[in-house]
Image (tube, rainbow, N blue to C red; front, side, top):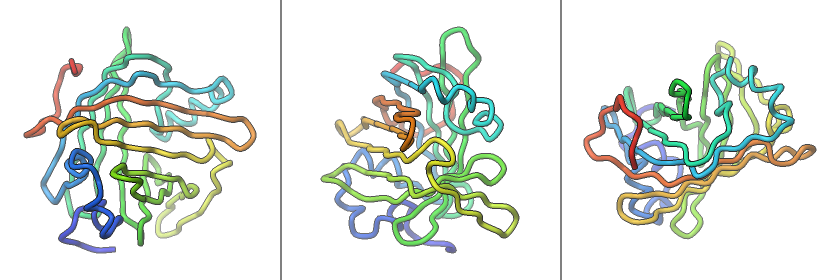
Length: 211
């Protein structure tokens, strides 16, 4: 790893970066000291009944979202605070009648087209990036637990299954996001989808997004 003049996603995708829809590139073209703010709504946030016993486990690690809902306002604040190969993702979900739920993570470039999204206590999900048409695709490649200098690899089925994320540009300012996790034995474990608008001159807001 190490410093790079390219953004994390440009580094991981290589020449395919230029094929992405302009709005998707805007979302991820974040360099040291830069940030992007998105406001949007999740048309659906879903988890299956078999996942419920593991919700507490997920909350301890700060992973995923423990509530179901439809038409949920969301704010996403992405920033590059130290170098171009680490991105901070800070998400806030505004469920009616609840305090905003925060889901924070850190993305790191590993090698080639592979990144890892880490949550608390060094737990991460490995993902391989690719471009389909002008859409950005993530495909999970197992879990990773970083304990000190050690990395322990874990298969998808140990937790919630394998996942795909597809992010497509709608227009110059909006992107459509679709995320699904499927366990090989129990079927769909998590799913959410929504449309987000990129906000210029990002500053993390204090109000629920109205987009």
